[in-house]
Length: 334
Picture 1 (cartoon, one colour):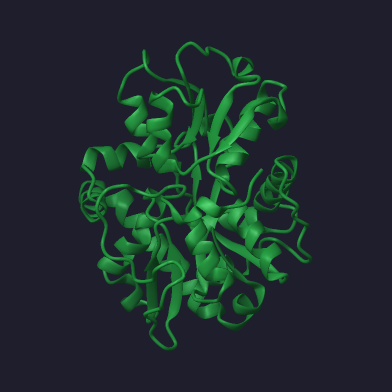
Picture 2: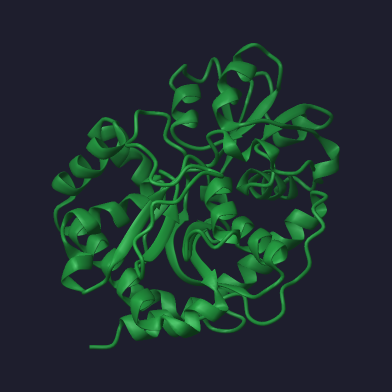
């Protein structure tokens, strides 16, 4: 599998609607407040709760000086994390493992932002009715991203391997055009690209697999260097507590919360809510056991590492734990 050279294009979970100016440009200069905890994220429904928490004043209420730094792709966010231009990143197991390998030092997940339970898709031309039909076919995959993991899991469910398809590296934004022109037979996508393809109806695109088939495998996380987790636990606990307050607000006042988050991303409220239905947001109290040694989060990270290796990436298992429950436990203290 090629490297992630296309990550500076719109990456996984990057809304294509008009967005506010980036506070940090990939490879550019940083607008940073001294002492602020810097969180990097790319636009995606599950990450919008950080902005909602900021808008509702929760981080100010918790006494946290937080700088939210928005990127167009997970790759840009990960690279900024590797350069220590941000302290914490929101991303997937793929980004955590890649960052740890690049930095050569322990990187740990400390909170789940969401589980994908139907928001990630493998979409094929309607003539391809089964996963086995993909053998020898061209499948567009965003390099070095969660696309690879979803394709790996989809093929494995049919007893197939990644090597049995032709993987073509492609940015998400380029996939609809390539699919419609017949340059590829299938694509691995997520909203809003998935919405664009599926809007044409079943006669134009067929969902062969989605993340509802593997509800524990596709996870979004907050991750940081283990050194920082040990140095700034109080701030990280406030970060996840503010996120939890935004989740609780959304559960109590969905109309207002969805309207606020949709407006910021330039989407229609109903479209935003539909995408959120493809995610599962776990209360913090339910997360701590998942982060214990040998728990579900660590197992998912190990499984992801194996998928990346099978896809041709030469990543080693980082030393030390891949996940820690310490921040979650602290955030739950009175």
